Amino acid sequence: MRQLILIEGMIGAGKSTTAERLAARLREGRRSVRAFHEFADNHPIRTPGVDLIRTGARAPGSMYDPGQWHAFADRCAQGTTTVILESTVLQNSVMPLFVDDAPIAVVKKLFALISGNG
Image: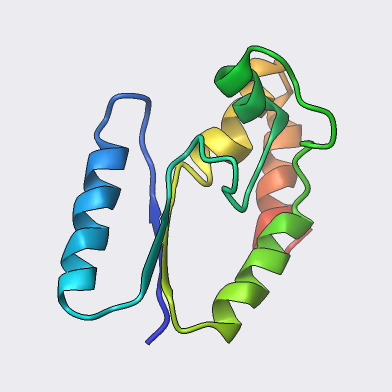
């Protein structure tokens, strides 16, 4: 059985604790699980805003691309592992736009691109 579980929330809300406990519980049930902490180097959805928070500098080549979602969805669809992602939408996609003071039209366009309607 494949599943994608997204855990959202602000910093300090308990996302990491929830992801760790959920992953442990699923593993107890003999499920194959992969959990990604919001600041993990190998998080499948990367943005300059997250790199700025993680390192204090914007890393070259870390620009957010809505195509990351589609590539990640394809990988999930082909596997049997349950994937748990922290802060995929809020902090890894939307929050950097607010950090950069983007207009609401840009935020709406991003959501349209992520959902495949853009």
